[in-house]
Length: 138
Image 1 (cartoon, helix red, strand yellow):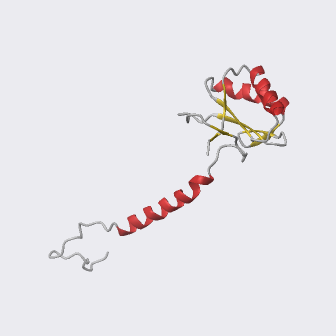
Image 2 (cartoon, rainbow, N blue to C red):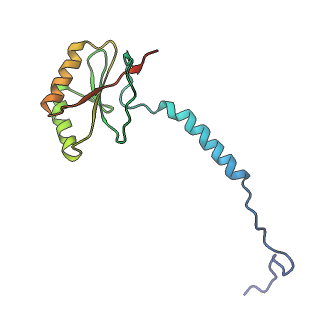
Image 3 (tube, rainbow, N blue to C red):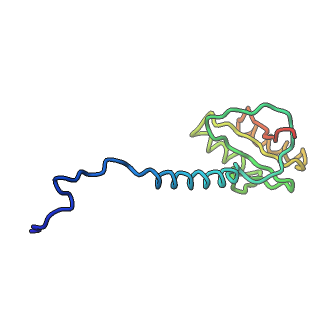
């Protein structure tokens, strides 16, 4: 058994204050990290969106994003997909989440024909409402 004396004698009291300087340092570092990484968090694939004057939409759920690049490549969220695979995959996803919104992010230089084909595939998946994502007018 230990029979020595402790560092807390009867005449000294434990310190009752919290040193907040390390806490503030950690919080400032986290704030800087989030400020740097937040602009990098984009939904879907990087496309050059067209400009349009439209009000921003308020969403409380993350929508399904169908991105179309100017060369006609189609992506569902961030995964490359063919036009034939699009309708069955969206049907399967929407079986679990019936009201999940679907947005199309088409590159500004994408031919209208490619966007019309994607919208037709979405219509064959019984999707009645589709949002077109644009950039605010500069």
